View 1: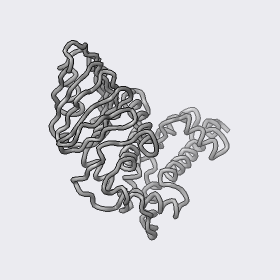
View 2: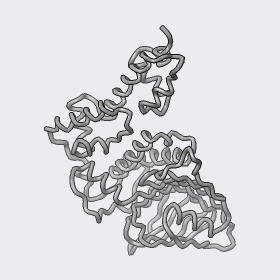
View 3: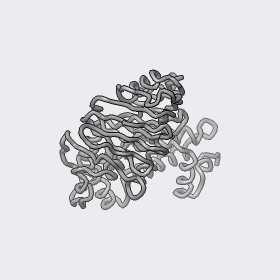
View 4: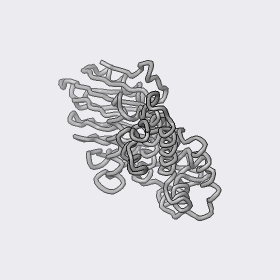
Length: 334
């Protein structure tokens, strides 16, 4: 039975959640078609009983899910039109795309699909539970342009496999696990737009750093000097609207430089990262508001949420480290 998250208080065109538990092949096929791509799905052994367990969520330009079929499955697709990564948590997935040879995705090596080239999952092993992430082509290309400061060819191809046992690949796999878990949790922190935007950016950046592609070396080049004006534009924007759910990519667009350049130049000019500076400005605004507020008409949570803090426990820790007292102590009657 499928469940979608469409309660009035959570209606969000960028976030749709779908859960499915079924033994019906047509229901499974339709669910993947609704959240990912149109497909042809067949049981390799008709004697096996299907035991589908899908948890899927759409998060802006990303579609994320944890999927298990419980039977050996074969699937065929037309061109995806998007980048896609399948990372088995258990079992394995034999797949190919276009004219390439069959590859094996395992818990140690993810399969990476391109927008063009018809993919076939030759055998989705009945023991295979996997994380699946669809990335809209335009979103990944724009993100790469923001990181490099260069125009990116629309024909960008990522390496077809990614090692997730070490280095950036392992870090990205851990981050993906976290974001999938939070995405399918209807009460999770990704309900907060501020955190959701950061997580999306982190997944895109991490994928571009963890996979091989023609722009990989560009991401490692040192940043040139001379961007003080860009830093000032970002500082002015943050000071004017610190409650806005900025991401590093959005701030880089405001500055007119790449996200990577902004990070390094901001550290050189200001001594910290743009997002840490943003957090500190928000913290100062919270402190000022609490100090001036009526404790009978104001709560710490209302003020913190109003300035963009989504996790009250971590907020209180940072607040105490900065001001030497808890936010409730700032608010209490004097």
